[in-house]
Length: 69
Image (tube, rainbow, N blue to C red; front, side):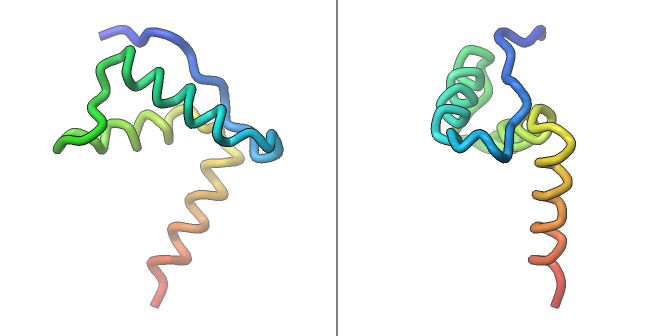
């Protein structure tokens, strides 16, 4: 299924995270990505695919630290 709309790459320095999350929610809605269901991991995968390299590296490092003993 083709994707409707386009989410820009997340900017760590934009200072406007609420606007980005609002746009992301709207993109999920228009594309039928479930919010509260067993398929909610699709939102996470969708976000990871559009956030951009710098944010992905940062988030990966944070998650890796949380997995360390």
